View 1 (cartoon, rainbow, N blue to C red):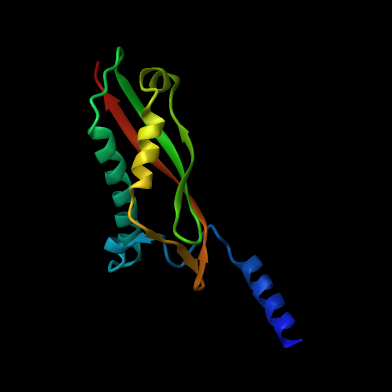
View 2: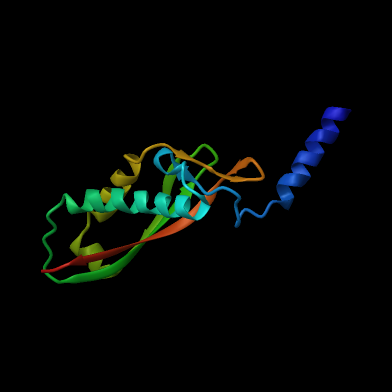
Length: 138
């Protein structure tokens, strides 16, 4: 009987947690030693650097100059696994760079293991939109 009450309390506690605000942001091991806001910035900088590194290793040839902000929707589950939900970009970028999505996806798969976000000590899934500014001259 006690176990059932405990499960009910835990279930109610989970319902009361606002997943939009977390106590601890997702992190990479290289960012763990930092304070909360610096850790958040380090996490996003690591993501951004990884994607830019993968993209800059390619010689893109385009027939029109591209100035686009690509919106990469990411999800980090309770185990720290990072997945791409969606990649939004302009029609010009789609037509000029048809392999861009696969390059971005490949850059995410090579990221180091992440620690999930925590709310009251409980790992929680989180979603983010990472903007990538893309400028390629013809």
